[in-house]
Structures are given as C-alpha cells and as structure tokens.
Amino acid sequence: MAFIAPTPPTTDNGDRIATTQWVNNFLGTAAPLASGKIWIGSVSNIATAQTVSGAGDCAVSLSNAGVMTFTCTKTNGVAFAASATTDTTNASNISSGTLALGRLSLTTAHLYVGNGSSNPADVAMSGDCSLASTGAMTCTKTNGVSFAASATTDATNATNIASGTLPTARLSLAPITASLGADVALNNISNFFDGPSIAQGSTGTWLVLGTASLQDTAGAATMQCKLWDGATSISSAIATTSGANQRIAISLSGFISSPAGNLRISCQDASSTSGKIVANQTGVGKDSTITAHRLQ
Image 1 (spheres, rainbow, N blue to C red):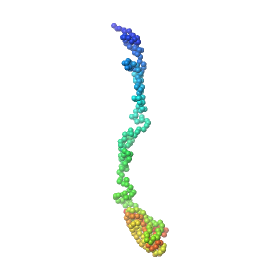
Image 2 (image 1 turned 90 degrees about the horizontal axis):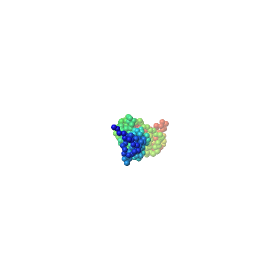
Image 3 (image 1 turned 90 degrees about the vertical axis):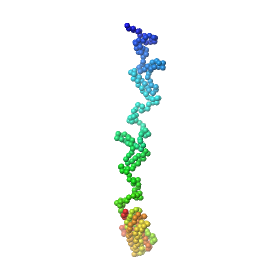
Image 4 (image 1 turned 45 degrees about the vertical axis):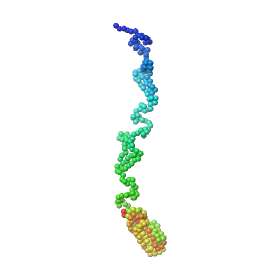
C-alpha cells in the first residue's frame, strides 16, 4: 500500500515532511542560484550564493558549466612584468635591452669563439699566442715556429751580434772611393793637412790605396804624405818638386784592421807655405783619390 504525502508550498518553514517534489520545487524556486555563482558557507555556517573573485591579484570567473578562469595581473600586490607570460628561456623572445657582461660566464683568460653550430663557445687561446685576463696577448711563435733569440734584439746594431762568425758572402766587399773636390792649401810647414778621405767604419780589415797630387807655386819644395786613420800610419812617402808650379804624385797603400777613424791621405809642404794638394789640374777630377777594399 502506498502513501502519498501532500506537498507543502515552498514558503512553508514548518516541521512538515518534505517530499521529493517539495525539494525540487524549493531548489528551483525558493533557493535559486544565479548563473556563474557558487554556494559558499558563511561565517554563520549557512550556504550563501557568492561570485567567485580574487584577493586583488587575480580576477576569477566561473561559467555555468563549471569552468573557472583566473586572470592574474599581480603577485602579492606587485604587478607582473611584461615577461611574466613570455618564455624568456628562449633568447629570441628577449627583444630589447642589453645583457650586462657580468651576467656572462667566461673562464679566466678565455674568450668566446663561434663554434660549428654558430654559437659562442668558451675556449682558451692556443697556438702561437696566449692571452692574459688583463687582455695582454703574448706571442712566442709565428705560424707554429718559435721565435729565435734575435726576435727582440736589434741585429742592425753589430755590437748586439755576440756569437758566431759572419760568412764572407754576407759582407759587402765593394770598394769605397773618394776624390778631393777642391785644392787643399799646405800653408804651414809644420802641419799635415788632410786630403782625400773616406768614412768606412771601425770594423773589418781593409786594403787602402791612394794618390795625392802636389804642387808648390813658389819654387822647389820637399813634400811628404802619409796614409792613416787619424791615429795609426799605414804608409808614408816623401818627394821633391824641381821648381815652382812643378807637380808630383805620391802613391801610398797598405792594410789596416779596425780603423780608429776615417781613412785619409794627409800631406805637408816642409819648404814653404805655397804648397797645395791638387784636386783637378788634369780636368778628370781624380788627381787626389783614396780607395779602400774591405777584406773581412
């Protein structure tokens, strides 16, 4: 036997038995729930319809299908930066600014070099040179060959060549020649006056040859000449003219090593102050000439 209970109105708050129909009617009319809201227990422990919201950092919405959406623009009250939703682990997404060098990791005294994948790689300098952390580069080789000891020595200065023997093929053996450009007056019977001379340097062994043409315009005279370096006589000779304006030639030759000064022919008229070393009475310009050959 079935009992059918009467259904009270939804506004009834007495102690009558609630039927299924009453509950459905109550939920559908007396306790409606607006679209997008949820029941939340209040401080009085009563289910209360509320709109889902954030605590200030996010906006929260709920569809009537139960889909909840959080739209957050802050964290703990601080607004998100533009990169909050950008994948900055991908460098191509970093579109502005310059990364400070302090953010780059690079081993002491190493440098970045593009590798086969076109990416910078941390490598040490090697090969002909090395690199210090100050940026100073030190090279001890060229094209894989170590520098010789002379690499930092001025070998254009012969005094810096301290060992070995230079082959004679490396020596310039071309003769050095000079001729007197103008007559030289022998106007003091006590002095020698320099005629033709050359600047050959102070090293080596030399063969020196020369001729001085002489004349005294006053009369017969005794003339003497010497071939020397200003300190050491190599060769000397004496000759006498037969009368005024008569010319004689004195030829000298000899060897000298490590000359102390310019090689030269110097002459003296011991008879009068009217003598001279002649430069060009022949018209050829070689009347008084000196030549030196370096032998070694």
